[in-house]
Figure 1: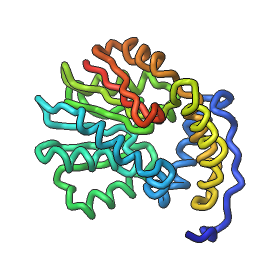
Figure 2: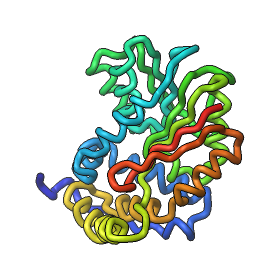
Figure 3: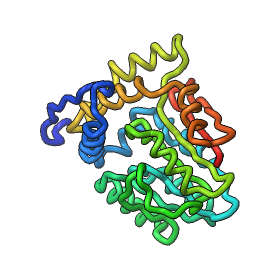
Figure 4: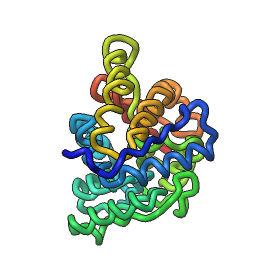
Length: 252
């Protein structure tokens, strides 16, 4: 892989704790628009392809029983949407993302896999979903909730658009419990990952932000409490790969 992707942008973002909500929304848009071309490659490379297994696990927990419809929120380039469509041939899938470049890239993948009849990706805002109440059996967000300042609003919208007993699922990068794995992971996130990203992307600051946003994400206990606070029931957290990723599931 050569380094001559045009010059590296010398961008520096403030820490997650110092950003205003509006500033964070702008920064997230800027980041994902700048890494779209390398996004899928970097996800596989930087996670050692674990992201593929994590999405598979998420899809395996989905239950379709009424509408046979799935909503993928902050869909990115559509990986979770496509995994769901490939696993459940009778399910129709909608994906929304607020970065148009990501939607365009994902739509190309949908066309290439000849799934346009069952998978539709479109621009959309996680905190203002343009769908009727009770429209889907399952709604999920993979690696997106930590980028949304108003997590309660996003989760409330996800709950609103699913049917009674439908599932809200959140797959997110998290930190392991204190100890060896947390120390190792922290070193990787803060020391190794931004350097690796620098080799492959014009905007390595995007991956410094990624590390910062993971380290500042609520603990499992706090995030489950957040899900319960909006009225989701049977909420649980499933740690994956030593806890560097967590799958959260709640029911309406």
